Image (tube, rainbow over all chains, first blue to last red):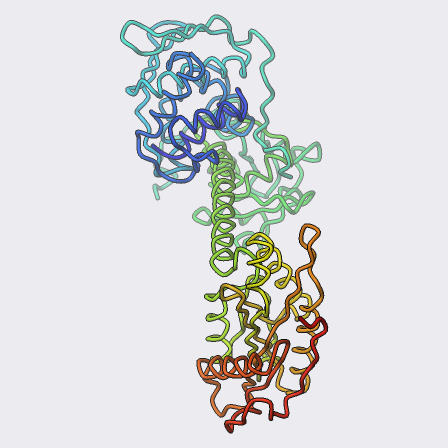
Length: 187
Length: 366
């Protein structure tokens, strides 16, 4: 896995549960407390070990832990901005999710990501499928957080086929968070 | 190009134009503004009114329109560039097509690669761009790249710091913080090759200073007694103290190395005057002879020094200089404690005690 994935897990654990928990997790898997480097490649096993160790330490199932990771990522200002470039509103954002892996690869060409497909089987209903369970759980958390970010009201669940069902109740439920195309500080 | 006369005509209303090309400008054949797309209107501000000369709003940056806006239509195949007169930092690229008799011409403008600045300057948002326009993607990419570059820069800095730490450790005697044998060898090699000495402080020496240099071999006297009487911790304390003394008595550009045990070597670039070197050696010895306190006990040591000067050699052969400084050190020890001796004065097998070498008295005999 790309170091960015592991680094995200590390940042999530430190940011949400504090350094002590991170150090305990790192120790459980014989990793130096300085952790992983975002820009290096790691063996897939490292990610798995990290998630298992954190899940054990926190007494939290892997799936919901990964969903929390997705929500955490969407809450980081730099990342949330990058995600908001994906759509003018939440439905637009959902419909362009199939571009998300390519968008990420534009910036990080060596990252290995699963294909995401999106369909619209009915009004205000979207089906998002993603072949790798790891990313699907992260995506579920991310989609929930981004609905809030856009001010939309949506229910996100796992469907029978293993994909994600997004039921959009209201696109302008709340004000949502501000997004300007211009990065703050750029003049 | 298709012949205009034979092309089927397309009629598009301005509202559709505004959606498809929010940065269009419709200009009459004689170069007057007819209408602007909403995004371009936002950029031009209230000054832009129908009927005004297009080139009063924009300065054309290509020769294509040097003859005036009326000739713009002839530049259909050119990449045009315009600077906004009200804000010359805003440069737009553009393309023009002629619309046929009585219709004037149509320009489509875009920000090109300076989109980020323009978006900030005019507070634009995604609805200011056509859905097919990749400007928003360009902005996304700019931000994503900045984030990635930031991560890479941070990684590089961490790696560089780790490398510097490792290098410093590899060149440093961990007990005293002085240079170690490896650093000394590197320095000597560089000195004999006309380069700069290296040591743990990474000091750069002016090339003019190293035309000659002195090599000092220093052994502590009575150090074993300190170790035996007060223990190794006291010995380590004394060695650290000696390290500080040697650093204090030398310049930043000198190399002070501990080779292990109580053996030290000093390399003094620029020291070619025998008297100056002897003076320094004596001062070092007298400093070493000041009692060193360790946990209430007074540890007393001294030092013996042997000196070789590069100016005494036709070719600065480092191994020979070190050996000669060592021989002079041996003679110093032989003379009694607390002596410094220049190798040049014992070259002709002078019997010990008959050298012209100045002796200094033990400050603290015993």
